[in-house]
Length: 289
Length: 289
Image (cartoon, rainbow over all chains, first blue to last red; front, side):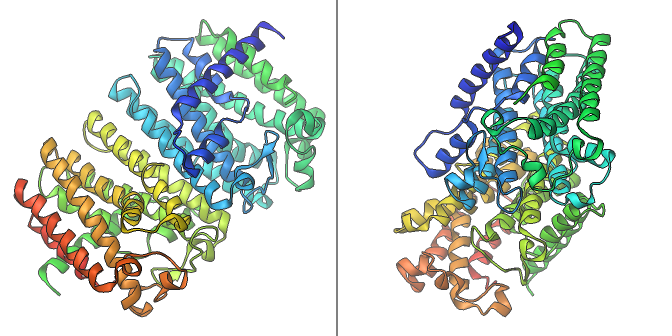
């Protein structure tokens, strides 16, 4: 394992401990379903982006943990809803039964519905200025909404209208890109970076967000489910339009690598201490799971 | 029509116009489903509470409109999800097909998922201090979450565990009471009321929230669907535990009236200009729809 992979591992451990403490722990079924849906391993890409961006500035350890946790709660809510029978109808997530399989549909919908406002509540209690808090609420709410995550998800389930790489780019930039960008941007706000640096993080996020998605599509074809934790070829089986299905596997690989390069170039121009964000861009397009 | 009913009508007109402007209006299916779910008549109780509380203090017309609209968006999201097949499985809402009947389940879930963050985004743009904005975000997020609205809804769908009036009170105070209280409280914050008055509004809200729910149960038994817009006796048909089913119709009526009196008494002690909130408490337990 490389030094960078060890760093990622330590951040994953840190966010998992944080999430343990942020989630409710009474003995209700709702609390249990929320914990089940969040504390299940997972790559924790968005928290890692929060941590790595915070290396560029100054923010308290606790507030960065809470921000990273809040964004992961939002991401987990979106996964629960995406997996529902009326959406992707997935039985497995990270190798375990999806929330509606483990509990039932109503409990899964409500676990998601409870995770989202918990994130906003936690942000309202961050240890930073009110001005920073409200800018973060604005950025995240916008990323979650009809022009962001939810807008991308509805395009994905009506994917008959997606035919070109451009359509696919728009869908993914809304569905996953916007929250990835918001992870970097809000961490920059909390770390008191200047506007120019926050904008650079945002653009870096746009590039790695797409690269991440293309690599996901490649993994779906190449990795057996024992490694990826999903059914191999599930996109093909569901007749999903993916980057490889439009431009082929080789061209997809090239595009992912180009996006990673562009991402690194954006940060190279404006940042010091961005070494780890550079390494992350490469890691994203080299990962097998 | 009484003068007070005319006032309620004018506030309903004002919130409907406000909501028109707050909702997205592109030609996407998501935007259409959001508008369909929100712009369908409805009593607009929560916006009315925001408007009436604002009469006790000072707040700009625009910011009160936006707050009232944001809270109604949250309420409408919760109705969409409550109506889903895996929850209450309702075909009609306010006399029209529910969102999942008009569109499909996935679109209904996502319309709800998009309304919630839109509310928080709008609040982050209110014309008031950052401190007020973040207090409002905190109050609303808490009211929506696992100890509030969503926590109450999961108790409602697992209603086998509800046997006593006390159980029913807890469920309803979470499911509907908390957002009603938050409507009054956040309007008080935006209207720059002092802490004592905000607390009085909160307690008033606790009382009228329960009174509203008891009256809803009574209406379900007494009003034909042509008046209520719901199926008459739908609670009985679904074997739902209600106030009348535990303590009988007459005792339910008495309790609703007592709660309205208590609500008025709380505001009587600490407020001037609370006449309309007094009238509302009476109106809530006298309404037939």
